[in-house]
Amino acid sequence: MKQTAFQGHLMSARIFSPARTAMQSGKAKTGRWVLEFEPESPRRIDPLMGYTTSSDMKSQIKLVFETREEAQAYAEANGIAARVEEPKEPRRRQISYAENFRYDRKTPWTH
Image (cartoon, rainbow, N blue to C red):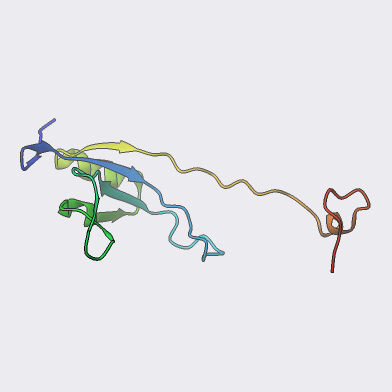
């Protein structure tokens, strides 16, 4: 594996499939894979404005791929040590509308 050095450091990244946001009800744009570089320097608080800042420019780069294999192939071709994070399947609790009116509810029904 050839090593690509950026300012004397080995480039490392993570490959993951982002979960849907809280504002999404469907599954649009959730099957994609993202290659994101690991931060090389810690973030620090700007004393004047109070927001966090970093001198690491690679933290702003996110590459989007259609499949995991494409992302892995890109990382391997460019000598980027990448770790793959498997997507977590969402767990849905199966409840029925009748559960709202059960007489043995743990929390009482209020209007």
